[in-house]
Length: 352
Image (cartoon, rainbow, N blue to C red; front, side, top):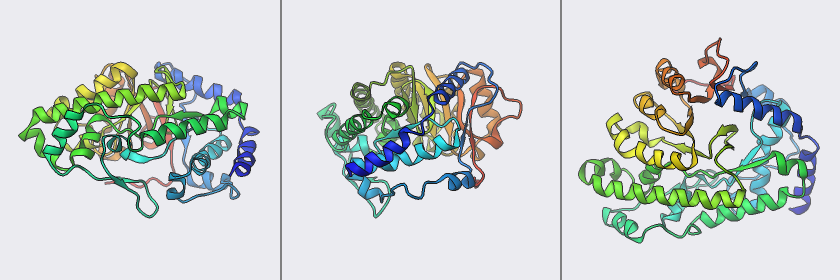
């Protein structure tokens, strides 16, 4: 594998354009400061462009193989870097330790499994007694489950990239998929979480408090490994303001009042320390006013804008100086000069 890595990283090293990457970052920084820009930063996911520029020689590995081999995972992660270097869009040159949504649940001792060729799936605890035992144990060892694997893979990435000066400077290793406090609780509790918010809210809050403390501890450890701070970092393909990118997918299933009680305070605790952005799939316009009023929130990413009232979304994001990150071009106002990072995608299919 060392010869394979040397071949392909050497190829990438010669393709990086530091001047363009600096210009890209500067433009995105202006957008997060709500300064007008000549061109809204965009990520090009047009299928014909990506196919045209695909490197048919670039190695491809099944996910399960990459899961157990950091070298294969690195090359798999660099596939998008290769494409977007050629596309010369505003896509961040970044990679992650790609172990899925089960990372924090596994740190808490939850079992997970791999399917034939997709991301791992977490098994939840079977009873509230087990949740009480989890709480009684306190903050777990961060190297339990996939925690150790994440830190070791990040160290491998850093060591490997260090031999390539341009790549070392241009490519960031963004934090793994830790979800959000409420999403992790959902993975640990399973469907019983929805009943527990009515039956035993105090127990739910105890679990949420522990998850938040563990999440913050993991992020602090992560930042020591990668050298990231809380100013401007990257996540997915985005340059972003802040150090954390939360996922509130499970929050779309609860009421606005429940969001304010069980989700927002714990997101806010993490945003207070790290600052950053929030993602959700599905319909989130019911809580978007409250969400955008969060302190230290710089951006919102919704992957299904057609399920939301985008007039409402734009109104509250604009009022609170929150950038709509990764919004499909068709939902961006034609006269917009700032406040958006755009997705250009010619094969988008409505989820309605």
